Amino acid sequence: MRCLLYEGVILEEFSDYWNFIDLAGMEGGEAPSVAAYFVVAGLDDSVTLLQPPEYGEVPPIVDLKIVLPLENELCPEGWEYVTPSHALYPANLNWVNPAQVPVYLICRRGYDHKPICELDVQFIERKDKVKPGFEYIKTSISGKPVSLNGHVSRPNKHVYLGYTRAVTNSFTDGITAIHHTTSKRDDSRQGFKSIRLHKSTFSGDTFVSYKLSKFYAVTGIFKESLLDRYPKADNPSFPLDVKNTPAFCLPMGVQVEWFRNRDHKPTPQYSSFVLTNEKGHKMYGSSLTFYELFIGTEKIQALSDNYPKDPDLFPYATKSICILSRWPSFFETFQKWLTELYEISVSGLA
Image (cartoon, rainbow, N blue to C red; front, side):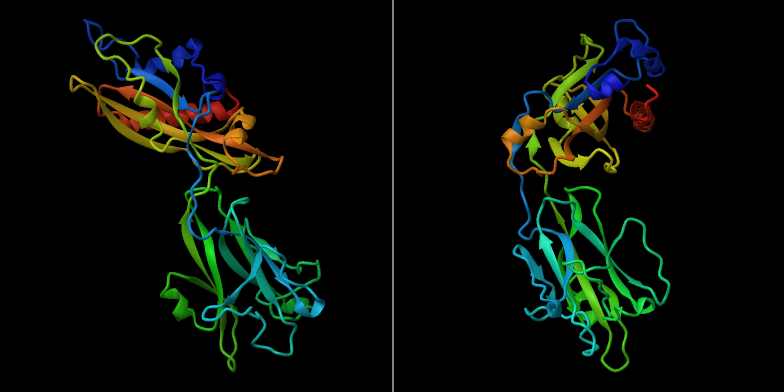
């Protein structure tokens, strides 16, 4: 099974596992089969680039830090200050208490990291728990201790801003705008989410508002290919459509993203489709698409400049395993079977 998924080879020694869906002949006096073909579609060694990366007008925010101007900290090149919602000057997150140290939030945009997709505020005084997967900013850009309410010398009063990143780099929600505001209502009308930083009877509440946008950022779209099939020979009454089947298995082409091997990969996605040949005969397809390490980093880098330079990141390409059947009533069964096949292959039991 591992060989099937990781080298694109379908081995006959797994035929016993296949027997429950009965890949027998469909016509000619033979017993009718539930499934006609099993195929693997993905990126082959030719690595043909179909479409270079496309990005939205505004890159997502991938880094957040805090600067302390009184400590001679400045916003580095390539970064920008978070501003009030209706102004362009930097926003002091401690403006409700002028006696406290001014704190400014800065952000960096790009496509070299997974985008930040959610913010959180931790109030030590309320004994807030740390949310799983969140990173909290507790030092300034030069490493000095920092708290959003300025009480650096009073640990029980600390307030920290936290963030978490999206699981994947593409077709995901990322934060594209952050504002500092005193009115939660104003930004909510524009599709912003707000979290409270301070609550004050005299100067009013203050919030950090952020907006999520869907964006697209992968190495590129690559040509899909038929990597393997079972059985190897066509059924004369209904031959496999070698040309079009891979495109139906991977309708958006092969997408390549860069992950660390230890990163959580996107959940496999199931889809179904119908192929019709020139005689009007239909073939019903059930496909499971997942990310798999692609052994061909140099070929991808040679075709696209949009790839991270981090040596710990490796290219993962989408791949599809698919069952084709003459019968339209087994989509749910095939989905369970493909999922089980995939889980066995990555569990190390195969």
